[in-house]
Image (cartoon, rainbow, N blue to C red; front, side, top):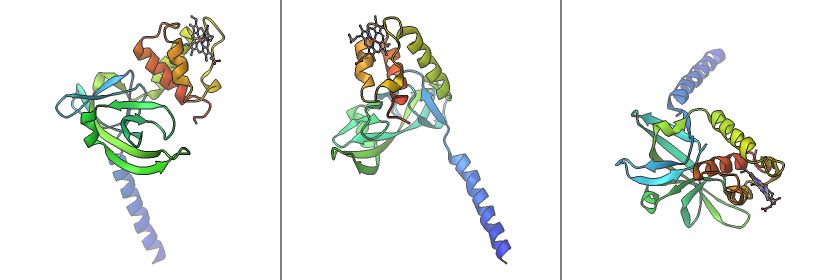
Length: 197
Ligand code: HEC
């Protein structure tokens, strides 16, 4: 009797597993700062390189995705990767805010309230890749080519995620970075910073 019900449980679990795989949207990552579009094709925001997007469906030129992150209470137009870290995933237009779904609420050490938030939008299929590794490889190449000419290169783990945006901004012109390259390098340095695992 016992073994019979065990088989049932195992059977149910593996079924659950199949559903989980079917429902599990595959991740995609923008290779550069990319526009977010609503169902009518209007621009409703911008997503930064290497941000994880969960793909919902693709119609060829455009891919429908879900973007998830954290926003500070009262400043919902900026979506961050982690609560309390200045790693920007996306900027949203005011017009997109009613479509943002709110999840968990948490408080950081400064008693700022953070909301888990997600939004479903469209991105250009040609601007995304399934390989985050390739994006980081390009960013690392950029770092090696542009950041060691004047001084010893300062590796990502020398500074925190919150320090890197100002440093990269200060070095942008010196290193001849375009705005797209600046975003790529900023995200790369932040995600490999000393306080990020
Ligand atoms: C054209 C020369 C030049 C290039 C290229 C350059 N830097 Fe710098 N960097 C400097 C100078 C000069 C300083 C000294 C401090 C200052 O003036 O800001 C500096 C300082 C720094 C510091 C030290 C900040 C501190 O507080 O200790 C970091 C980190 C840094 N650079 C990172 C970078 C990165 C990342 C890149 C590539 C995007 C880069 N640098 C490219 C000239 C350059």
